[in-house]
Image (cartoon, rainbow, N blue to C red):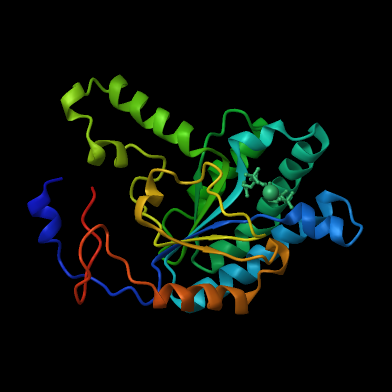
Length: 253
Ligand code: IPE
Ligand code: IPE
Ligand code: MG
C-alpha cells in the first residue's frame, strides 16, 4: 500500500448505507436477569432476535452482517452457561440453515472450530459449504472468535508459507485473516451500553464507525437497526484525511 495508491483510490460508493455491519450482541444476561429469568433464557431470546435483524439488514441493503456470538474469552464463563450457549447454537443451525439457504443467504464462520464439540464443528462446516454459492447477504458468525487470536493466526500462516519479514505488511496480514474477502466493517454496533470492543475485529475496525445503544440485544429490533443506519448516514468518515466531497475508503488490501 503506497500513499499514492491511497490518494487515487477510486470513488466507488457513498457512505449512505453501510455495506458491512458488525454487531456485538451484548446484554442477553442482563435482559434475562431484569425479568427474573435464567441467563440462558436471554441467550435464547437473543438468538431469536437474529432473524428480525437479518431481515431488516437485508431490506436496508446491507451486504455483510457479522455477529459476535461467542468470544475466545467467553470460555471463562461458568460451564453450564458455556454448554448452554453451545447447545443453542447447535439447535439454531439445525433449525435455520434450510430457511437461510432458501433466502439466498451465504453463511460464513470466523473463529476457530477446534475447541467446539465435533458434531457442532461439522454442522458449521456443512452450513458454510451448503450456502457457499449463495449470492445474497453474507451472514458471518463469529463463534469462538478473538481479534488477537485472528492476528496471531494470520501471522503464523504467513510464516508457515515462508513469507519473508519484509513481505509481512498490512495488505499481507489483511489477506490472511479468517474471512479475507469480506470488506472491513463500516459500522460496528454494540448493544447494552458498554463502550468497548471486547476483542472484536480489532484489525478490521481501524476506521469503522461505532454506534452504542443501551438497548439489550434481545430488544434490538428493526426500528433500532434503522436508527443505527440513519446515524451512520450522518457520520463523516475521513480516514485520516481532510474532509472532501465524496471521500472514499482507501484501498487497504
Ligand atoms: C452477550 O450477552 C452474549 C455473549 C457474550 C455470549 P451477555 O451474556 O454478555 O449479557 P450480559 O452482558 O451479561 O448482560
Ligand atoms: C462480547 O461481550 C462478546 C460477545 C458479545 C459474544 P462480553 O459480554 O463477553 O464482553 P465484556 O466481558 O463485557 O467485555
Ligand atoms: Mg456481556
